[in-house]
View 1: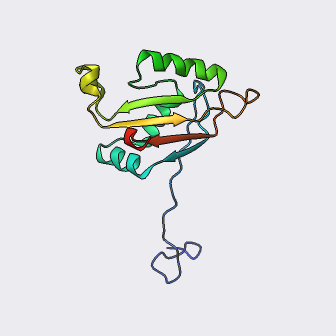
View 2 (view 1 turned 90 degrees about the vertical axis):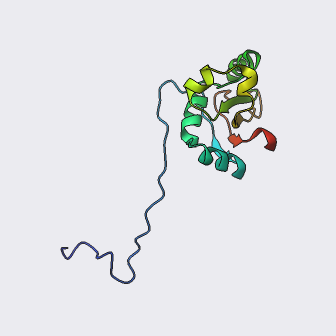
View 3 (view 1 turned 120 degrees about the horizontal axis):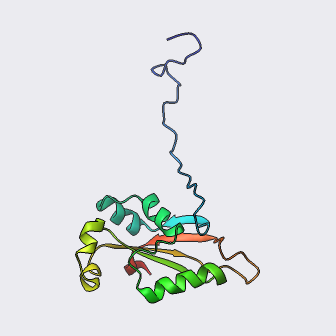
Amino acid sequence: MNSTTPDPDAVGINTVQPTVQHTIVSNSMQFHPGQVLATPGALALMQEHGFEPLQLLTRFVHSDWGDCPNDDAALNEQALLDGSRLMGVYRLAEQSVLESMSRKERMRLPTIWLISDATASEKDDPRVRNVTTFLCPSEY
């Protein structure tokens, strides 16, 4: 170790690792999620099933609404134009498993909702949201 490199074993040296921050960069992002929040229940469920919140958020901001019924997906597309609420429904299972199940069967799987608030007024950009929240359906 040279004289300019601190000795991590020395008393008083902070060896705590910095928190990792993720930034989503994409030219196809359909809206900005604003502040991203998650309920403790949603975080626990994603951790239990091996899903990273960033994976689901990336899908959401790229207009992959997950397992939303067609009517709700159409409402989301309209919301990108008028600023109303956006909602994604994500089943916590591998895609190959989901493809082999009926909608009724998929509804029994562990599920995370992502909801982005409606914009405050008609003057606001409908593609810029203030808050997006991860939650379990039972927490709504």
